[in-house]
Image 1 (cartoon, one colour):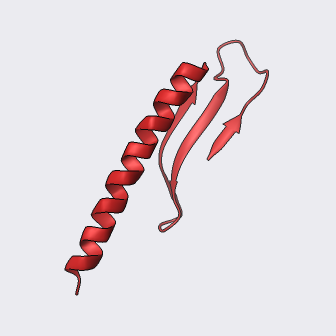
Image 2 (cartoon, rainbow, N blue to C red):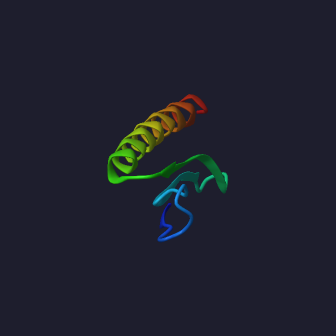
Length: 65
């Protein structure tokens, strides 16, 4: 999930990003980003987390048989 917060308080983040797991309908991680550099780093971290979780999920599914 991604939300552009727009003009808020001076210290509020410009973007809010969230890693959401649809399988369990729950947020796994979230981060406020004050600039695009932070947003790119957060996105890359979330993508890495999602890849690891997908690998673990497929490994567990194979091991369940």
